[in-house]
Length: 421
Image (cartoon, rainbow, N blue to C red):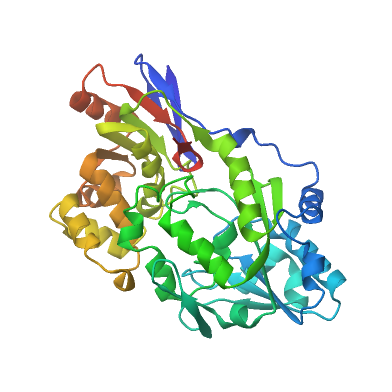
């Protein structure tokens, strides 16, 4: 058999007579709606678990629409115009602010806003870009974890808070979308880092596709309630970034409905676990660096038997993707020692990128990771306690030496679009 794994803008090929279990999501089978705007409008006309946006606007003086930033492929042009229109139909005098949910990312540029929203909205609407360090902030109380919820003051002061978003599997929050517009979207850096603390990342429930019992999701949903997020429009998109379904209404109920819909397409339940698991981040742009490749590795981990060899194919055109991420793995004695050190860090002392190297250290503590990437990254890969391979065939040969000729092989072509149960 010949297996093709996405890699940068190309592929890695494995030809083998060994039997393999191939695990793939059905997200690629999702067809774009014939009319993306009508799909969004239909969802807004049939809100889940709460009133319409028009009804919510009737007695409100000010409204904040939380919108996605430049790092999220939310098709805002098919969402925001309809949200603006319905708010003003409900209350022509309502004062609306579009607040860009950057979390801890850099600020979205004017050019990026125009590309996302269109020139007309950028020129006519009042738009503010959230900054987790310098924006005016307001403390709203204490989350279930004991962490303080500190949000952008515009959210705290608004009479009505609503949001757009999109839903995809997330490797420790379960799914994106919904409540994430508040936390991490418009929170202070301290609140965001606390949500990504060592104890939460350590939870077996903090994984792809899991909301129930996930402490990260629990605090996120609590934050949405405390910040009085009253309404969302969330979409599911296919691999071409077109709308395939839309969900509107109550932030918790509508989001859960969207997650349940998506999970039917991205969940797989293999009959057995692999001694060798091959995966990728789905190629460019998601395999741009080693940091991002951790996401694909978490899916391989979920499909792996004890002591399995994991092979990740990622072109990493942008290199490692974080100096602290690199230094943590490079500087540790071994992954187990690094994990022990991280677990001693209290919630309010969480370090940026700590969660990413915590997850990688967890994987490396249990499995050998063979990283198929560019030759110039070999030294860094080895310094980070992984094994370098120049090709998938070379990596598979290494894995066979370690696990033997009878090793069970699982292939996951795209690890970031799959929920392994």
